Image (cartoon, rainbow, N blue to C red; front, side, top):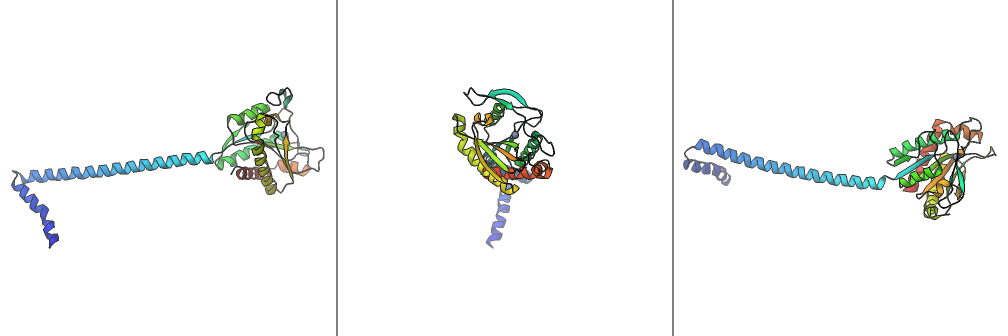
Length: 279
Ligand SMILES: [Zn+2]
């Protein structure tokens, strides 16, 4: 009963208001307009609220994306060793040093395949770049062309300028003993203000990367070796390592190092090593 009474109330109000007006029709339509405009105001304000919330939500999502990117986007510089010709110009071995060293002696050559080292280094470097980019790293190459010959100070400056989390230099080894196989990691020795800063972290990264690399590749682990005689290390202000991925002087390793699927395996193992070292 109460419901019926309340239900009737608007009609009673409408009737009374109509009685005080000269035109029922005019009032009803004005009432409708007022109600409609009230409703549309409410709808607009609801839409505005939703838009405001969506905008705020987007901002939150954007800022979380930015902070995630800042956290996850480590910068890796890949430095493919050597070039298609030697560079016999000399450069300062270390900042403040009077000792000069040639920029690039030219690298090794496959004992069976005769493949020059720079070809192997570049092939692995490009594959490593692609894998690291897929894994959300920012990757900077010191060079992507075999005809570009860089000095080692120039190589180091690229890493410094990029404020790299890691510079990894890719090389293949050679020995007079053709039986020698396996991989080794070269790291800076703490001989100047640059290398004293990066020595520990470079050695830590180098050790972890080499261990994972040798495990995955089932290669002999020839260990981490500190070097004070490498220009590219001595000028570096950021963590830097140099891997010798295998021996071009060993007939079976030489053949493998020119095999595309083996090069892919190398690049994957290095990427796994880098991931583990940096996380
Ligand atoms: Zn080399």
